[in-house]
Length: 218
Ligand SMILES: Nc1ncnc2c1ncn2[C@@H]1O[C@H](COP(=O)(O)OP(=O)(O)OP(=O)(O)O)[C@@H](O)[C@H]1O
Ligand SMILES: [Mg+2]
Image 1 (cartoon, rainbow, N blue to C red):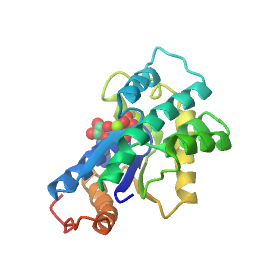
Image 2: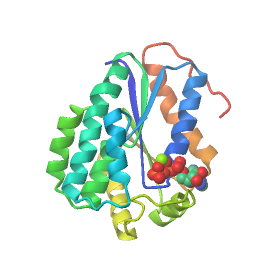
Image 3: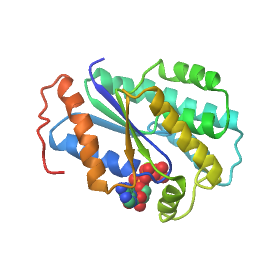
Image 4: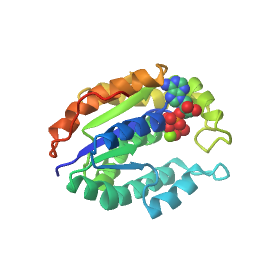
């Protein structure tokens, strides 16, 4: 595999989608071939699963919730992420397996070994080269997300749940410091974009293709 796999993680409203689009704009400006996707979603199956998972009218138990995320992920990895990496592209994914370990593990208390075993099966062990964790107090993130309007099923969960999710993300980052870039998501958007580019540029430069990673105005 020759491409580069990057993921964005963090709680609701942390700024993942904002920073992901700023990063992919940087990559596009340099002509770096890039595939942008998200979880759950990214495939026709994943899009249908996403609608189910985020539906505020549905009550979904922790185990089937986890299996639905895993179904979406397995389809995405096989049909989108691996083929793009095989073409030598940079793949940027808005949420990935760490979200499962944080939300379904730390948040919903499903056993870690079960989550890791099924996630291994769904991904074939595919792990990102770099994961940007935008860390934020969940109360701040939910207030930001609330400005967008109707809360989805996860935004309606209580603050204690979201606090466990945040701690889960930080524990994952602590266990794999080489893979994670942890950023304080209360920083201004520009400062975050600069810090993310500083971490991504050398990785992009190291993959095949000879793309320019010289600093351009952000
Ligand atoms: N650094 C920042 N400081 C303040 N507000 C921000 C910052 N980054 C993004 N926002 C705002 O916060 C809101 C949520 O941002 P965004 O949608 O990027 O978060 P997200 O992590 O993708 O959320 P979700 O988990 O719901 O998809 C948006 O209104 C966005 O403009
Ligand atoms: Mg988002």
